Amino acid sequence: MINILKNFFEDNNKLKKDDINDLEILCGLMIEAANSDGKIDNIEIEKINNSLIKTFKEDKKQVQSVLEMAVKNKNNSKSLFFYTSKINKNYSYEKKLLLIEILWEIVLSDGQIHDYETSIIRRLAGLLYISDVDSGNARKRALNK
Image (cartoon, rainbow, N blue to C red; front, side, top):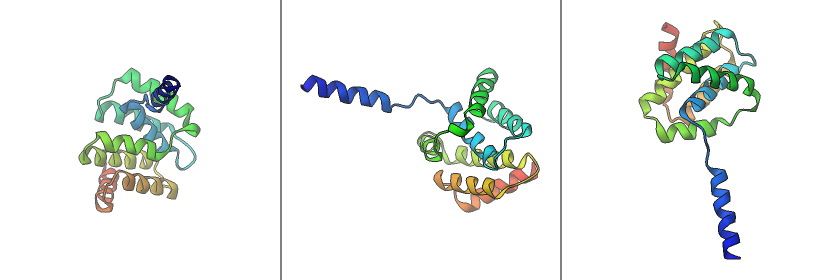
């Protein structure tokens, strides 16, 4: 009986572990931001691709693969809290602020800013413990690029 209970809890702990890497987390958040207005434009996809490769130094082939999968599964993505909790555990404030700036660049890349896009970045900044002032400054930097 004790072994059965022990095996049950061990199996549940294995199921709770998330096999998700930084690239998938970043890509997931970026797709969420791009899709917050209901559509993802090619220019947004290109901006996500470039940001992951150039800014976050991810492998080009892996980025393409993960990005394709994220776009396919955009309607089945994880919650914002899922992504941000992982980022809060592993990223410095500066890196999280850089992520917010890139998210602003992504939503601004199509030349339009929708209320939903603004809302999702505001929520993400809150979940990442980024101050309103810093998030606003990140938006200004994104607008100037």
